[in-house]
Length: 469
Image (cartoon, rainbow, N blue to C red):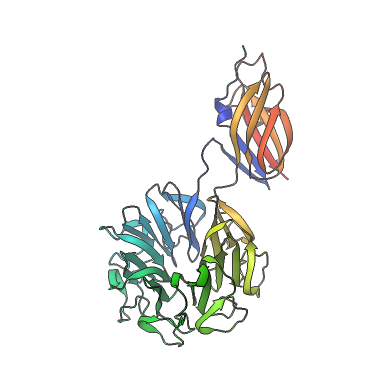
């Protein structure tokens, strides 16, 4: 009886040759990782996997990735192995929440935004809250907000009233700001927005472009209620704060979730079809809105059914519509994807979103590696998959006489797949023998390598090589 050595095939040495790039690695049978939450910061991105691990990529000049260095990373790297349930990426700093309800932070801290009582930047995660109870976090330009049982806390820059404590003085340690029944929070660049449990929208901070929605341009050092005037509605369900604009979702009759915005609209940030600044809330076209995101002069919207829409500045192609150029803008929402999107986050010039299959996608600037593509200084004009990485995955092998049957899934690239064989796995690749080749397409595959088993070779190892078109 002829014995075939499958140990190397079940963990094949995968040599992928594509666009001049050679990657050597091991493919293995495993459950695909899924992303459950993601946050786009100024120039970096954080995401959490279903196993509770925290991953980061992008700019790291202030240690915002938490890997102990100040070196940018252009591919995702794992920072924390488990128990992370939420992330918030700000302007050069990061927050994350663990399953025990404790808050952690890293990165820039010049205004005390990490809440550790100092203004010293931290290159590794440090625990800020030790007593648990934190349920929600948000990172802004230079300040941070978090909730503990509907009580609002914050730290960081406050010279524009971002923290709403009435003082205009920076706060370096985590401080309770108000005891109102706060339900949802959003920290913008120099302002903050929150929802109370009765569904009313409140805001504080810089208001030069009406981003607080109170009908004025007056900076507020204490919370002011936005001029929602939605007396027939059931109240707000979510708030989002961007660079100089704000968004919120309100429930209309018959559960028609509508999106409203206020503030800067020069590049169509609010998506109402104009470039007029709105000092009071204006409705954004669309209905059945399930979530949104406000970034650096642009907004992302997800409607029921998972369709993704984008509006605003597109100079770094952060809208993902394939357009580019210095004056690329969209004054009304344009559809980017028709279905499948469950969550979105907007950075300064890049966007990320999660699909229903748990994959993470992005578009826009990758100048610091914030999209994890391994190719800094490239703008992605259409959505690209960030995680899990594209791969050629072998799921099953079996023998049929002297033939070898291989099953798997290819989401890396269309091309030619080659099977190489050797009796010595340590031999240089150029000394292996090519025994089979055929075209391969994207998606599930099954192919049969004829006469792979040789009676004169009781042990044989196999390698796969994919050369993309």
